[in-house]
Amino acid sequence: MTDETDKPKAEAPPDPNPRLIKPPRQLADKVTRTPDGVDTATLERAEKMIASLQGSYLEWVEGDLERLQKAHDQAEAALAAGGDPTADLKALFEVAHDMKGQGGSFNYHLITQVGAYLCRFLEQIDPPAEKRHLEIAKVHVDTMRLVVSQRLEGDGGPAGKNLIRGLEAVLAKHRG
Amino acid sequence: MQASAQFMPPAPTGRSLMRRPDFDPTLLRVLVAEDNPHFRRLIRTVLTGLAIDQVTEAGNGAEALKLVQTRHFDLGIVDFRMEPVDGIAFTRQVRTDPDSANPYLPIIMVTAHGDPKLIATARNAGVSEFLVKPISAKSLLARLVAVVEHPRAFIRTASYFGPDRRRRQQPFDGSEKRQAPTTPD
Image (cartoon, rainbow over all chains, first blue to last red):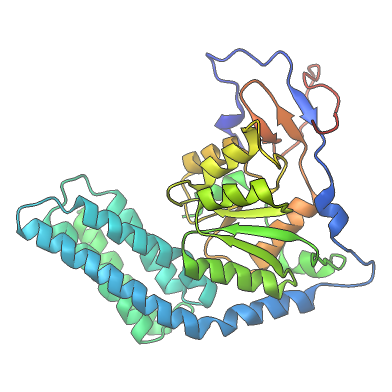
């Protein structure tokens, strides 16, 4: 592995007096470790507690979908009025980014996947955005809505694969 | 895209976690700084599941900075993207502000970003570990184990103060430029 950030910068002279400091071990001193235990029970309990939040997730993801739709609608309205939809697309990105970060925690991996596709697509738009960009963004929004409404957990099975295949075909066509 | 993985040590596998001695972090006081209330709830839920009940929440980096100045925390879990003070600015302030109350605070940065440049920026600010969204109980526990079991030495140079950014301690033929370990300032 090469890590560019570890290399001294050409213009920066080496620090003549770097210091290595042993940090306080206050963290390790607080954590109990017993020689005979294994931690599967704790891990399982934490996983069950995440699973118990799934109902709440399905409520708040509906709110995210509404915000996603609203940002998209506002972008469309701005474009139709001859304005610049950049701010609305930024809002769209923010919501998609949050959804991407949460879906997988609740076994909605397709939300994470489509959210990632949408974020990447929006990042690659060279402003100003055009109508065709908003149309493709809408396909993402609709796909995420379907994932939630049809409760497509995990990889979504055949229906999930079809959704992803369709989305990827749209993106491939856009890229030409 | 998980490009950030190149900067991260391999997470312990479920099997290695299961083999490890009991990990009981019940006494830890954890600060969670995250602007998304749902994600804050998720992290708190996982921490509670891991028997960590002393969790304090902050809605952004500015709130978190106020908290670390007035209360002691053993660990900070901070989001990358927050306004008005993001996770990187928070970390930089904790590490380098002359008045910082806890410059050695272990900081786990939660991020959905795979951009290696952003990860490098966070690391250069002094982040201890990264936790990639979407999180799981296993991934969060793995990062907890990493900061507790393998705390990295801190480095102070003219331009950096924070955990040693070298993941691998590779032997080399030259003379060691760093001075012998010292106690914290």
